[in-house]
Length: 316
Image (cartoon, rainbow, N blue to C red; front, side):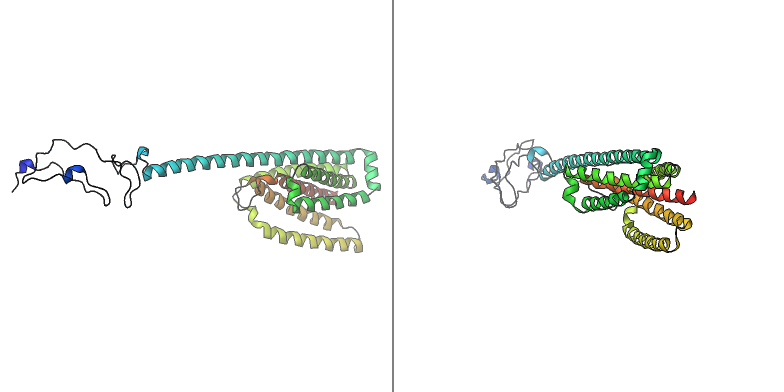
């Protein structure tokens, strides 16, 4: 039985398969174990050239350490995670800057369009010679409507046109001129008082609807099917009212009711388009679509003005 005083103070660690054992294990063994040192042996392992299941590297360090100095799996994962997080942050910040620029461009363009349209409405309503000329030449209204319809289809359906400078701004300028003439003609035919009241009511309604659409949890972008069906019903109702108008003559009650329905419809479209542009909903516009966003909001506001002017005309 071996003397317990000469037992080794530690157990020999197991060596992984495929690695050569340390040199001292190949030494000849005597009948009795030699006196071991009073401290652990130094790390004198060689630079192994890889084995079954072991990568190349220095295994003198603690194999369970996650230090980045040994290129362990934990260190590599931490480096990859840090690089990925940094890259994600850069991409997210770049997207936020791009979206903020697009949003500012939408509302800047919309502001210029609305200011120009408001100026045209005031000129057509308040300057008597212009008002008389517009009333005597109603066919200019239909020409402007045709130009509006064509440019609206071009900007709405051809992506390369609305995303490419300067063609997008040229088309948007022609579009704004046509719709401004239509709004000014409505003001000239309905009278200055009805037009100015309609401008004030439209401004107040647009502010309220925009703020509501920005803060509400209700997602208007999920209601595109409802808006399409509602639009079809309103269009068919308008055709029926036109038939009644040509057969029986003007009817202020029908005009007021139909104008109220149109105001509701374009108010819903304004909320829908506002949420599309602001983002964060089920559907949203791409940052490159600021021309399309400004055009949609402009159409909503101007047609809401025309509908409210119809209500004011029916009530006068």
